[in-house]
Image (cartoon, rainbow, N blue to C red; front, side):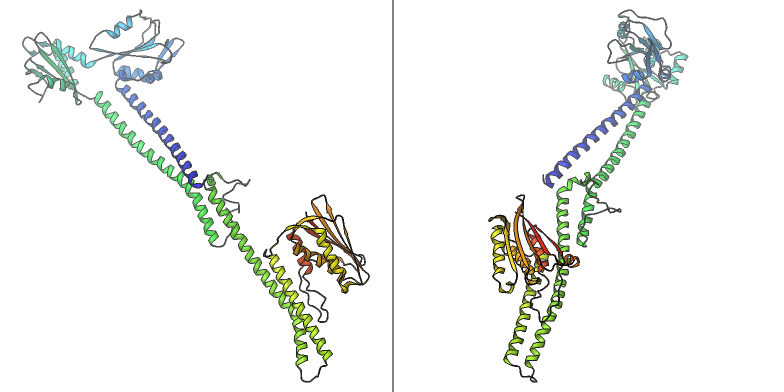
Amino acid sequence: MNIHKRFMIQLFLQLMLIFFFVGLFLFFLFGMIGFLLSDTEAEFDLLQAEDYFISENVSLEDEAATISDRLKRLLEEQYGTLLVVSKEGEVLGGYPESQGISFKEGELAGLLLEKDPTLDYAYWRLDESDSDSPMVFLKKENGESLLLQSVVQQVDWQQGELDLQQGLASQLEDKNAWIQLVNSSGEVTDEYRAGEKREVYSQEDILELTQSMEESVSAHYDSDTQQTILLGMPLQGTAASLEETVDSKIGSSILLVAVLIFVLLLLITFWYAYKFGNPLLTMMKWIENLGKGHYQQPVNHVDQPILFKKNGKLKRKFKLYRDLITTLSQLTETLKENQDQRAKIKMTREEWISGISHDLKTPLSSIAGYSKMMESEEYNWSQSEVREFAEVIGSKASYMGDLLDDLTLTYRIKNGALPIVREEANITELVRRTVIGYMNNPDYSDKTLDFQAEDETILASVDSKWFQRITDNLVENALKYNPAGTTVTVSLSTIEDHLFQVMIADDGIGMDQQTVNSLFQRYYRGTNTSDSGSGTGLGMAITKQLVQLHQGSINVKSRPGEGTSIRILMPL
């Protein structure tokens, strides 16, 4: 999956998760607001109480109901009576206290259905999930209806006048109530404390007045005289206070929701910044370090990788950028390898120049010396002497050419610039050719060269040219640096069908351990001007490098006076 699709899926899932939690949060928040509003309504009017309010304030234990102090207070303030009645009609408790009371079947239903305008009823089941749970009944006096009934009894309907007694007038004043008597024509014939109320009403005006949100207005119509009593009182202490409280709580709730949503958005912003921004900043720092030449992954203050755990796995917050991190890791490794390669090339180049400067100095000195001798007018050289000088100059020039070739070869091998073309070849035949070539060389006629092969056909994947160079170097060294009468044995065998072995052993002068240890080291040996056969000093180093390029190994064993054996192992 590419990074584009991973980003889309990641963002979609995270947004869905955020919407889910925001929705859940708002659900519980508005549920809490609803609970507070319902609780507030119950404070002003128990008739509006929800089931949970009754369940919280009425408990049942051992067939006895207990009323909470809060509910008792509300019953006293609202002139209510509460009864907890079992399914069988037995009163389990109530407030004010009601003991020894029971109801027959249908008696409670009759009370609830009774049309008494001065009383209001409500009922709840104590446990909604249990059909046998006791019922809670509330009876509450309707103060406004009681007052209206009292006023109706003190009206002279025939005269169309109010005949209020002092006690009732005091009650009306206490409640800041007003009264108007309206005849059949809609005209106000009498009033009490009405102030600047209308003098004439239509039917629509009366209906509108009873729906007023500013004050509570009740009406009683006398069918005999076709007159109407209007009783009004301000919405205070009950509905007005309730409305004010509800509005206040709604406003506070809206403010709370706004603040919480802002905080939630702030948290989501910080979370997104941490989730997406922090990894990006880390990778930007990584890229910045690459630009400065620091080719390594970001690390913390204790040099521990920032991107990975101790077990090497990518940390969770960086997994979204896995492809980018992989690309940056590859780029870092490539740049580091290039840097190391440049340093290696620089060092090798300096080594190569130093080697050339050192090793060419002696043969060049010889060539320059003989050249000056030949051009000197003080001497007359014979033809034989001139030929001898020319032979030395040619020998040194040939040596210089070989030295340049060997130095160039080591430079190419060290920098991975030597092409190795491995093809299946008959190793037996390649080694045999080397042995035959040196057997026919008259320079080594004073030594014995023996070849032993386990099989006439041993096939392996090698570069024939460079494999031939390996065997040539080893056989020639065994012949060149040993005295006359030395026997050199070249043997070839296989090991468990996986490896082949080339062994070059001689019974010559051997070498001490110090020479064995430094045999494969590159050194630039100054040559004797009269010894053209001393070599460049790079042959064994080149041999080891070529063996390693074939994924092989080379090992030397030798002791002074006991000869030397060199073993090469290579894969078939």
